[in-house]
Image 1: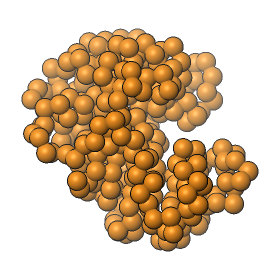
Image 2 (image 1 turned 135 degrees about the vertical axis):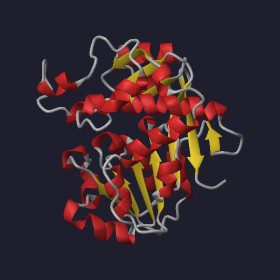
Image 3 (image 1 turned 90 degrees about the vertical axis):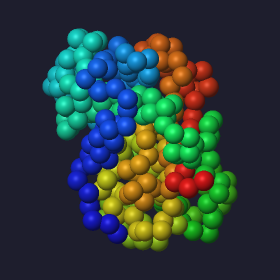
Image 4 (image 1 turned 45 degrees about the vertical axis):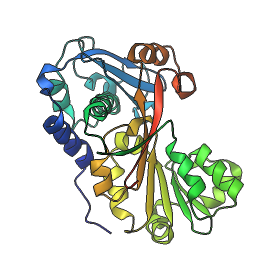
Length: 282
């Protein structure tokens, strides 16, 4: 196992890479619009690029009107025109909604870089879901699924594959999945036996990505998927991730309207966003 990295190392180092690689300073790019929807949070930048992240409603303490947690949102009501440099100064904020907005910004900047980076920089497959890789996994080796990822669990069931589930909310699992639930104190042992780990980018919002990756033995295939993980993969690959799958926003205005009206992935996939898969090696 690797030495435990610092919290938010991936986000901080990814932002540093983008600052270095993008053709314009972040001070010159501003927020054009922000939407915090029921299921997703999205942004549109002044350069026309958009980004998305899941909305972590379940992580907000006392999720009611006027919760103290919501008061942590910087520039609330006045975000239009604020430079990214100023907003990203809040990257260390523990507030879930702030993190969702910041991750959306990083994803939007990443979409920009994907468009301008030299050909061959990344091994990108368009219109491909990261979780499709589950079909390539040896069913004889245990798969650790981080979170109640029903599409992944369903595929593993159909293939008769061996799997284990890491989930903070045990009640989120179905009755037939409970025997595969792994309590926190037994997770390291499960990781030691795993042939593959499948997780979502939601761990970026909870701030648990680095810790989890540091506990996975070298050589174990690691797949991370979901709209939240739609950023350049350099730091993930350095930490042992095999492939990441995210979403490129193709029509920011339409996307923001959709999530503003309570839309989920079913409403924008293939319309205002497309899936991409980035492998560490082609």
